[in-house]
Amino acid sequence: MSPSFIQKAAAERQTQNLTEKTPVKTTTEISADNDTGEDNSTCSDVSVLTSTWVTSYIHSMQEQMNSNLGPYITSSLHRHVLTATTGIVSSLASGVSQLPLAKILNIFGRIEGYMSAHLLCCFGLIVMAVCRNMKTYTAAHVFWAIGSGSIGYIQTVLIYDITYIHNRMIIYMLNSTAYNANVFTGPIRARLSNNYSSF
Image 1: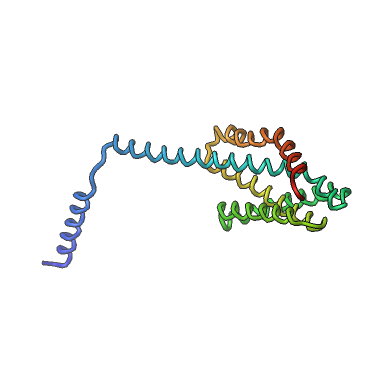
Image 2: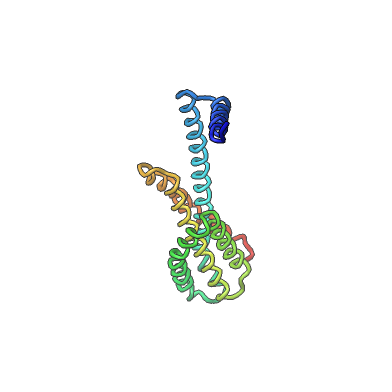
C-alpha cells in the first residue's frame, strides 16, 4: 500500500465521522435559530437604550442643579462677578475636549471612554462639594464639564451604533426627552438643595 492511498483513506474516514456527528438542520430550524438570536439582540438593545435614558435623566438633573446653584456658590465664595467666567472657561474646555475624546474612543474603546467620562464627572462633583475658594471651584467645574460633554458624546455614538438609519433620529429624540422633564423639576430641586444644604 502506498502512503497516498493511506492518506486518502484516512481523509475519507474523517469526512464520514464529521458528517455523522454534525446533524443537518432544516430551513425551519435555521430560521428559528436566527429569530432567537435577533430576539436576544433586540432585548439587549432595548436594555442599553433604557440605561442610556436613565443616565441622561440623572445627568440632566445634575446639569440643572449645577447651573441653578452656580450663582449661589460663587456668591458664597465672594466672587459673584466670576459666575459667567466659570461657565465660559468650562464650556471652552468641554468643546475642545471632543476631538481628543473621539481619538481616545477609537484607541481604547467606548466602554473605557464612558467609564473615564463618568469618573471625570464624579471627580468634578466631589471637588465642587469640598471647594473653599474660586480657583478650586472653577477647576472642578472644568472637570465636570469635560466629563459631562464626554458622556453626551459617547451616548450619541452608542445610539448611532445600535440603531438602524431609518429609526435613528426617533431613538435619539426619545433619549433627549430625559432633558425635557428636568426643565421643570431641576430648579425646584436646586432651590430645596439651597435651602436645606450646608454648603
